[in-house]
Length: 175
Image (cartoon, rainbow, N blue to C red; front, side, top):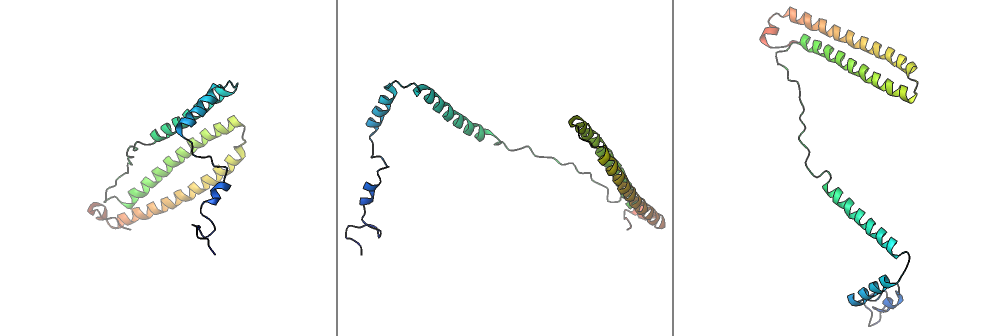
């Protein structure tokens, strides 16, 4: 099935090279340089613009690699997160009061951001007044419920503190 001069199971070893005429023969560096030099000696009108364009594209690619290699290579500075620390003897009433204060601050920040966004909407001609009225009513209703829930918890916590007079001084918070 196979010939004696066959290196592969599919057929003879070297005859397939002759069929591939698309690959050039090995060229010596001397003949390659003489071909390049003879090409540049010929007077062609598009020779210099294409040479300049090819050099420019090559340098842009090299420059992009250099810039990319130097981008985001330095380690970032450590990010510091400041967290409020609380005393372990803090009462439930104090916690709930702080939650109410934080809720009010958050709502003020949201209102400020909404005013900024409404200014941007006015610049672009976006009609926001109808949506704002609906969303404000919903937000006020939600805040009313949250504040009522916090007030109920606050009253319960204050009642628990009054029923156990030594709890606030001993450092143990009552549920």
